[in-house]
Image (cartoon, rainbow, N blue to C red; front, side):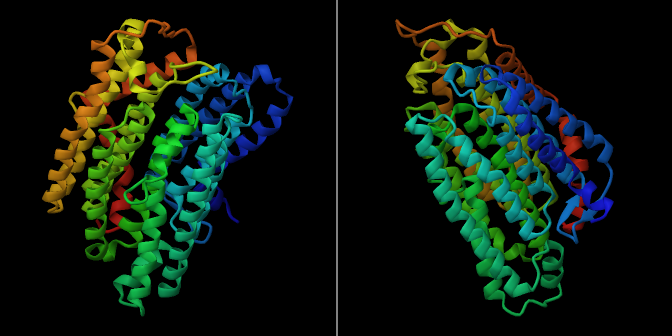
Length: 486
């Protein structure tokens, strides 16, 4: 191992080291004071963010070509760290109210975030698999951490069983690609395809198909989405928020690397398949969301639909598509976290009613929380001047630029369909009377208030002034796209 190896994965390495130390420190922190562990976790994540400018501008490959340090990886490192910080801010009050005062919650969340970061650095299929397992195993535990609540345990079991099954597809796909190309490094796979050195194309295509199944599970693309509503509903709301944002971003980090770098020479082969999956994902996610009466399940199917919009950017196969994917992942993360931040205010230790009816008259109970949730619903719909509108614009533009006009039309039509169930939440909050026994919602906790403020401001700011983020994304993917010949 040389110094370049350490620098190549420094952000996830710092996070893993900090998580391990925090796990030991937590042994000496009383159960009633686990908020100390949370603030220490935030401190570690701030250190990780602080290391990113020091690495900016560098382009390194380490561990014998298995990991890469570039603008693409550093951008995703920052996104994952910010999402983790906001999630931890939400847990401060939520975990206390629900009796989930377990110090291991925060190191587990950080271990999962380190796997997500490693996903952005991976340029070898074996490293992709290691990153997938590192992000998934802690999440299996976090889904069930609200023990003895049956819904939480059921959520963890379903996610574990189906996640393990998807990992099997991923490993089998990697094995077939290795059998066809003789390598697992994405750069070597691309060069061998370009040079026509692949002897068995059928074996390679079978491997690609299985790879798409494994990664499709992580991003909840149709038809690999069936786990999503049950897992989202049963898991603690803060864990669901983390999964809906960071896990999806990690999955797309790998999909972009694999398909727009390692398999870029075969774009004519895989583009139609991903375009069809994108269309099905948008249609199925939005249509099924129409009939949901539980907000968490509705947002689960909404998450499925948004995976379809992101796949549209991947199917575009151009630099605009890559830029659109990163911009949309960022805007979607802040928007979804804003929605879940509002949702954490509902219920107490005994119950957590996330039915849509529970939000009746929410504006009268807490105008600030209702306004944040309204902003999130508008952004998810894609209504200006929110971040969701700008993100969808970039993705639709990329699809049209790649002559996928039919896919862009489906995207627009499904966005119109989604307006019904998103605006229904707003109507429920503003136009209906609260239940007689409904309690006022408090903004007294600093963590929840900070999370609501950060996500709401970011959702609005990225919609009104998208240029700073767009410039950052464009520079982040410049080296990546030139290497991938986009």
